[in-house]
Length: 74
Image (spheres, rainbow, N blue to C red):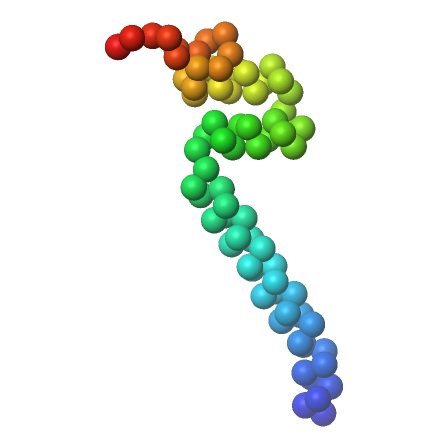
């Protein structure tokens, strides 16, 4: 009887463990990324258009795009 219980529950436990690791790994990867790096990744994956990407970079002040401030002296 106990063997049947193990056979039925072991795959579910393995799935939950794998899923938790994948979710935590994804958060660690993005935790160290800057906002402009996340925008670059979204653009590379095709999630945003070039225009939106340039707007995001301009909003972040990274210098790329028409609204960047890379040449301003403070």
